[in-house]
Length: 84
Image 1: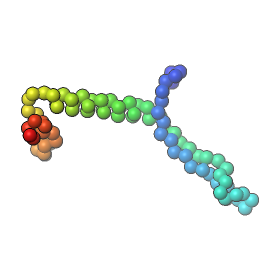
Image 2: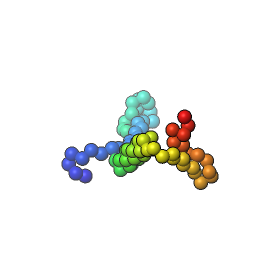
Image 3: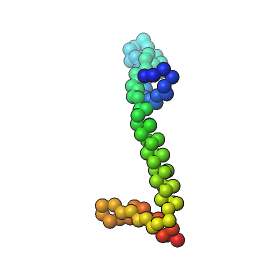
């Protein structure tokens, strides 16, 4: 890791209690936790969002009619101008 580099983590924590007879059952004695570095996942999600915005901008501003279908022939995108 480079000094000053921003990283993103997903963490999960849970308290651990001592169930002994001389302990307070409402007072945790420790915390168990796991953390995963999700920096690359977050960066990929941001890139997908950026590309989706770019594609939507391009498709909204071209003068041609664009229709996109999936493998089953169902429309997944229809140029907004076509719907007017």
